[in-house]
Length: 89
Image (cartoon, rainbow, N blue to C red; front, top):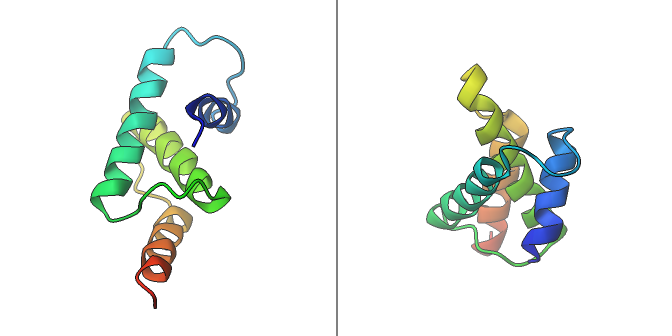
């Protein structure tokens, strides 16, 4: 997975284009999302599903630090579906 592309997708999801004053923070959430998914058994297979899950998770983590909102249902469902399908179910 190319982190440069994933970072650009994350910026688009956050509706923030160009150089960000808090880019280190955004990158931290991107790395945290990848680590969190790995701990849950979701490994990088470079699929569009995986990339969408990483971007969605990082975006939610970045936004929730302000709003405190719970994880969106679509992310939970996508994560569980990916985990289940990788397990051969």
